[in-house]
Structures are given as C-alpha cells and as structure tokens.
Image 1 (cartoon, one colour):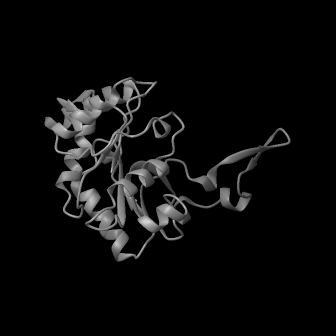
Image 2 (cartoon, rainbow, N blue to C red):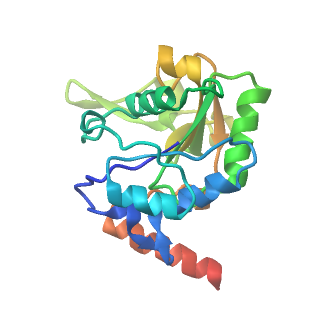
Length: 223
C-alpha cells in the first residue's frame, strides 16, 4: 500500500514531481512491483492526477480516497484500514499490509522482501524500518528547575560508547503489519521487530532541499 495524497502544503505536487527523470511515487511503485513477497501494489490517493501517474507505472488504484481521509491530520492507520476493507472480497481478506510512503524513493525490492520475511520468521505483529540514532538517548539532557539534568541518570551519562545498547529511530521507509493488529491497535502490536535500513535507502523527500540532496545522490551513484 502506497499512500500519497494530493494536498501537500510544504511542497505542492511533490508526489509526482520528477526525481531522476521519473515521478517520485514511481520509485515506490517500482520497488513494490519488484518485491517477490507482495500479492499486489495499491495506491491510496485523493488525487486523480496522482492516480493517473500511479496507473501508468503499474499500480492499482481501485478507488479515490475520501476527503475525510485526505487532510493534513488524517491518520495513516485510518487510511490503511479503509484500503484493506475496500480490497477484501471474493479472493479473501487482506492479512498483511506493507505501508510504503511515496516520499521514500530509495528503498529496494530486497528491503521490502526482507522486512516481510522478518515478520513471518519472528512471528511478529509489526516490522518497522529504523536507522541507528545519531545521538544516543542515554547521553541526553533535560531541564529541571532551570538547570540541566541527565534525562535518565548520571550513571547512564557516564557509560562508555561501547557499552551503550542499540538505539534506533523510525525513518518511515516501510512498515509491515498484520491485519488483526491494524484493526485492534494501529501500526504497532506487542511484538515489534526492527528492520535496520541503510542510510542510503532511508532518504525522505519533504522539502525542496531534500529533492536537491536526492538528485545529488542519484548523480553520485551514476558516476
């Protein structure tokens, strides 16, 4: 499931803006179509223009998302639930959904397949793509009564780098979630497994500057 609404305020038209010669959303469609673990590639959008581009690149767009699910504050969970219910039919119910955000163009089919297989192998509720945290939370500060204080404790602050446990941040590149978990609690079940994605695959396009950086990355790879 690729979600891409038409009303981006920060960067209008970004989902179909050209990146490396093809629309931004097409990168996610191509990755999904190249994955061997997926049964179908669906785009959920409220935009006829985005829908047309998505169909051109081989995705299914069986509906246009209602306006109630296409606002700035619309929940991806509600969007996924709506799509899954729409797709249930004679062939059975959707049992696992893979959420791909159109603004993450550099994930690969192998990333998608590895995340899906991880869900099955670990019997997990959810797989979430993550990156290593740049700043470890054990070494962070907070403010108490106008003074800096360790966010956790002084002993945490004193830990050597090699003793620090792994720390990750979500990067939004992909989510794999079981249908029953989506219906009951949202994207995250009790058993959440991380899928560590390489920095080069974790780019997120949200601003003009992000497009410039992404184009530079593509040109460097081409060289």
